[in-house]
Image 1: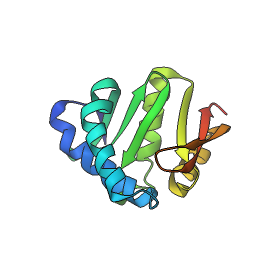
Image 2 (image 1 turned 60 degrees about the vertical axis):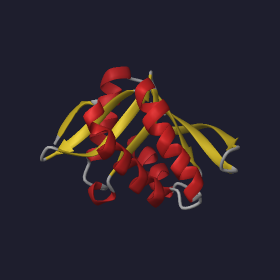
Image 3 (image 1 turned 135 degrees about the horizontal axis):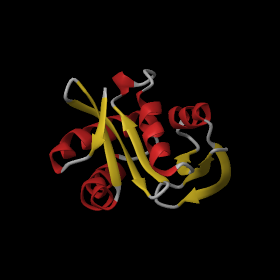
Length: 142
């Protein structure tokens, strides 16, 4: 396992990890919304975040995107879930920023469990207009 800074050559692998994991954790999102967000990830989010990728055997299998101490995204290919790799990415974010915050959809059971197990605690709940879903804002340390 190796964590390194994102480069433009990682774009397709990052988008693939993002989409597969997004569809798994966000069944309520429409295909249209996911297609638009995939475009946004490539054209808006990645160019404006501090992104780190996780490689196994020289293949990118996940990433974490940071905006200061805000975790904008953390996604792994589902076949790599439960192996401590998400924790390794979050540890990298903590190494860089110490205190962290993140938002997660209430219906994202996978993400909510991951963040709770890591030690994040809820500080706010609000409505996400584009998806008509509730979102929790979490902070670490909790």
